[in-house]
Image (tube, rainbow over all chains, first blue to last red; front, side, top):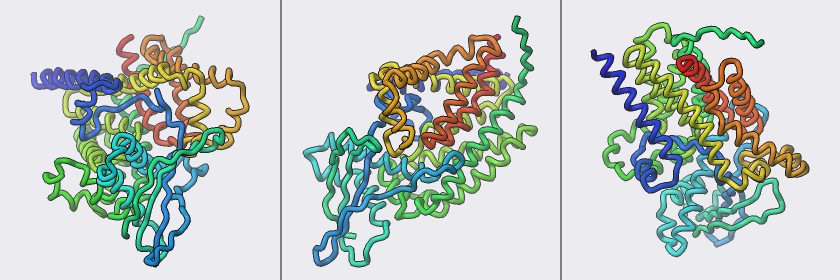
Length: 172
Length: 271
């Protein structure tokens, strides 16, 4: 009897889970409301690279300023390029994805909070990126750091690059 | 007359097949995280000090800071790696399987709760498979059947939904999406990008539409009789190998392949 109850209960859970998964693929208010409560990521988004595929690269660049106000040239936060071994192991993909998620998140917030620079600076994405940048190898005389986000078109030189965000200088 | 006999696949074979491939996926995932372990420190991209600031209910988890910080997180990943290795060997003993799955489910939930970004669809599929198997192992044989059917339906849904989403996209319908994705440094490839740029737009359009049509019709894998439905498994494998080699999506291959035995099992149930 217990087994029957468990099976019926489990069947119901799976049924609801599947319906919610399908619902999560649609951009509606209800789906957003449910997804907001999904802290353990039980509801996937199966739309992989569609309908709008990632057609641009977002680049994170930074420059340093020393105590005498000398400013360095911009340097890009470069991640390891994929080699043939990436077919088996691709650890840089995880860092790259995390960085892309943060840059994308900040880029999204920037377009919404365009007139609210304080809101942008206090956003989670901004702080997380700044935290990452402060850990990079820097000149010992560096007293402040500034970053920019640029939207590029990768290997395609027909599309122009676009400046997404320029941060203030932050003391390090 | 085509006369192909396909061997009966038992529930145990299905779980074993699924868990063996799942084990590879989990191992690769854990090794990759261990190779970038520095990112879990306070100055890394997965710094808990920063990540915890995003959670609105962080005050409830303040006491768990030690667990989510470095190096405890690395310890959790090592535990996950060890239990991933044990998983295929535990299938013979139901109680042991349940214990191994419990550890894997909790480490999976831990990682998803902790790392709010940097995860992809393959991590999510593995997470769903682990939870489903775990729930199934808690009950009877019929409960485990249900969990295997659920994994199969999630996998099929992923292909069909991806196909429908592409169908609604102008970039995919014209084939432009393939060229533009290949042109990105993140998922693209310089040589292929140059190749796609030089081929006729009709080729890109046909290439794109073949993906859309096969993904949209993936449900046929349950309807067509064996061995005709195996066309979808062969296509799916080649598709994931291509994505692994060209786009660097290495774990997707193993995460999706591990669901194929469950699709065969569901097909067998339906016929």
